Image: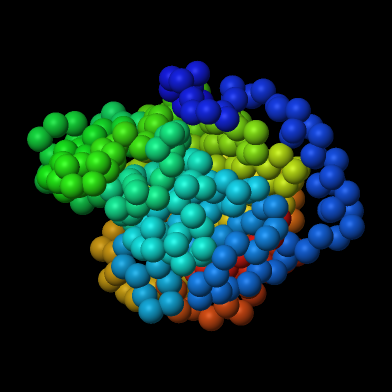
Length: 367
């Protein structure tokens, strides 16, 4: 679970303890499932307010990689549950998309970072630096993410590689936050004097996720493991597993079990792995990344093993969803972003019989 877990914001409860609300509302969700509540679709809106559903998944940005396109922005998803928003990753454009989705910054309860590749955290500090005036100042936003990697892997070309940074070359989310605050010190100091704006880092309650004893390291990034608890409040219970994303460590997938009985799993960036299937067992929605490698131009990455060891092909997404018994697959963090939806669906559908949605930016899925 997150380190210093007992030092949690108001509304949080100890990991692993199922709240009474989870127990009471689970029966209502089971009844909704029996009645055929539809989660197989979704609707994409250019800009809108929340749909009015008690809970919904919103795919704020759906593109893999650091560069936005005309129709897709950087990877970021939100769960909006009874007036609270839980953010998973915050790629390029996430803060803008958060507003376009009609979400209020004072609803932001917690942020969960899967890993520290730049395309997943490009807008992370912007939520506090630029969006800080909209965040509630009476409680901090919980941030859970990776700790330091502990070492750097060898370069794939078996030669020396440049190392950036004067201090720890593998900082975790806490040190990333501190360094961002220092880099933007002038702006923060000026705003403090002109408008009494809070220091951006003071709006975040940052916790690096403590790993269970499974022998994980930057050289053994995702050993087989069972899901472990990360955090819980009275609306969601969050658990995680490590996933293999080439040489990135730690890299997480997250599962959100809602108090109403629904469950949503985010794969993060990963190649096909049984850890994801374990985490996603019986879930209602599996939000999974995918790369349509046959459509990627030759030479886009000089490492011939990169795509195979970093990402999941659509047929493999279907295999994971089938093994997990997931009720609905939502493809997000897709690359290339211009592959026709029917090709994605056909590829996933070759190994999975449930509904498949190729997510668009700002698409909403009532839960």
